[in-house]
Length: 253
Image (cartoon, rainbow, N blue to C red; front, top):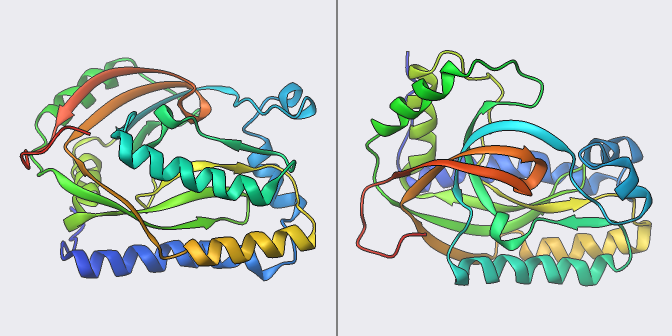
């Protein structure tokens, strides 16, 4: 049975804000990032690149549905401004930023790196996506947060819960989809890859608090992209197909 979703933007945005805060608030309960949490992030990068202090994501194989890749210029510039502002606080502390053209928001994942894969699934996915009828929607970034593992995200909000409705349609029609799926609509910006020390961590806390509910950027999302990702953070990927959402008479993202 399909999950019933309240499509009121106000109700949906409240749900999302609470879901983000439930995780983001945990970061600042300590005086610095915990080594055990940061290790989760470090495991996404090659050992050699971490030693050289030039983080490079590991290779993988993921199939996913996203928007962005790329967003429009103004939207990207606003997110890069956030990255630069956080970099000013981090200084020489090891961190990684997603490249501007690789910024995206994930609807769902059809295959995680450790999942088995049947090539026949791809045709089924494409046929299912071609039948989706959902409107284009306003996608807004309202705030930045950092999770306990050092993951830096832009808190996204999808008008009328369109992304959530698409997820539910896919879950119903694609029984082989992994159970592990995002319950957010965030844009991953990058990762902090080592503890900072109490003083810098406190300054970072102040910086993020100032941006935690800030209206940062808005765009109209009217296209979804089926992606075959071969290196984390879209550093190597292929766009397999594109699927339009209903027109709002604006430029395509």
